[in-house]
Image (cartoon, rainbow, N blue to C red):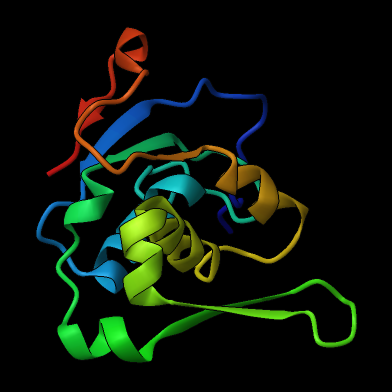
Length: 141
């Protein structure tokens, strides 16, 4: 009977660069979540944090259908009566395009301590410039 391989010790995460220009939100988010969780590695172990750091550029150049921009809304609540805030996807893309990707990726990660730690490894930028050149992120196809 074969033993199940469990990774012991901490591995240094790699830095990956993802270009969001011309991509759909959902497919891009699943790809990013895959890299954050470490599922692309042969040593993947569920429940063990072994993912990489993902830098996303050109978040403002996502390919989103016009109907989706008008109909999708983002909600947050202050936990006070009448404290519901609604922002349409069109306004979100205009003001904070990074939050669109972050929100989509968060929906695909586990909603627990590990998922919150993984989300901190996601760096999203609206333009093509990012401050992580010193980490030398590898472009992902």
